[in-house]
Amino acid sequence: MKQTVNLSAFMDAFHAYKRCDQFGYTALQILFDYLEDMEQDTSEELELDVISLCCDYSVDSVADIAENYGIDLSDCEDEDAKFDTVIEYLQDETQVCGDFEGEDGHYIVYCSAF
Image (tube, rainbow, N blue to C red; front, top):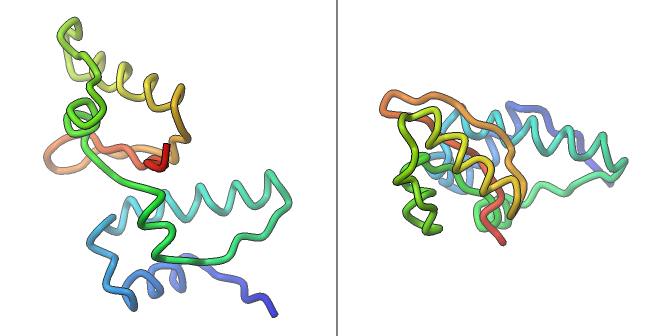
């Protein structure tokens, strides 16, 4: 028996597992949209597994991603160039779910299981 999950139920599942703070509202919305699009593109239904999603996906700032993966940003003249360099690296290595501007910088939601 399958159950259709909307954004509200998706968020509730992360709250129930006390994992909502790992992503935050905006990142969870991006992740939900990405997974929903993936289901449509592949015609395969996904099972909601909060723990697995928390292990496989991350949201980090551009600076943190560059530091964590050793991406050289020394030739980047501005924040846009840094973003472009990091997003290009991630697109080559894994799946990028989306990005957003936070209060203290630009953030990217991506599959970190690579």
